[in-house]
Image (cartoon, rainbow over all chains, first blue to last red):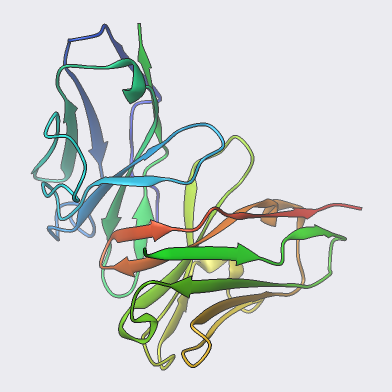
Length: 110
Length: 117
């Protein structure tokens, strides 16, 4: 049950694109198409932004997209906006019934 | 509206116990796995425990096995976390969440547990 590896921070200017990576193993990210991403603003509960690798919950802008290659999943945000600033966490199924989170990435919109 | 509301957090001494509750509304509670996820101050998210729809399967992260017990009452649409032998490292905001595979949606607002003398 080791945590998934994410960069501690990423940044971008408004309108630009950023990608956050999430690296695991063949026992979690690489083994299942059950990766989700969560956005968290200070003092708030996490909000799901992507589930099942690349699906968006209702209400999430299509500027947010997810993908996976091998043991690494990625969250891409295009057309960065100020309100996108916050912490982002990836999460992967790791075999019933375990779930593992990434350490989190702080996104700064310059 | 789908909603989860946690309660029961507070200050407790090391070695003490606390019971968290999570009231669910707006969906068929008995049809879903449920989870507890925690977040230590300034730290990342950590999955704590899962419970199956009928309570027949319960699983825990290694660090809480033997100390925490997850349970549910489908008649009351409620999820619980009994926490015993609490340690300083258990200090965190505890969130309840509806879960499917690796998707936690929605989340409650969280309840803060502080373990300190």
